[in-house]
Length: 175
View (spheres, rainbow, N blue to C red):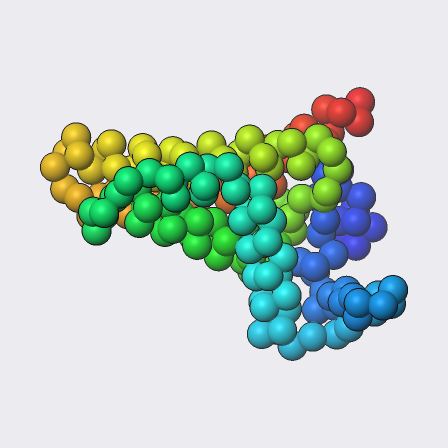
């Protein structure tokens, strides 16, 4: 795919996936574009996705925090595992290390209003399903560690599917 095509994919921010340049803000109005090492790119992408998932997914994370769960494989454990899995997979997709499902384009989503609303629904639904659904499956089967496995599966699947969903929403809004 040519560079011009990558940069114009609706709803997708592809540049971080194809280059090692990242933008940094120095706190006094200066934004610089810096060439970073692979590890530096990974850390930059990790902090970006961590902030995104943590802030936008805050309603369900607070709900889980208010849930009385003292079990080793309870709602809290499943939520933390899903949260960290979502951050890791989102980082790998944003940096171009992993190709998302349903699209050939590498990279993460842009910050348009429709895609922020999509993230809000998507992250909170994924976290709720991973935590409460994971525990429900584990209780139904009678294998407590299964809650953590379900949380990992939901976290990976939700983050690999999100870029294609966002791209299709951006394409439909463009027409």
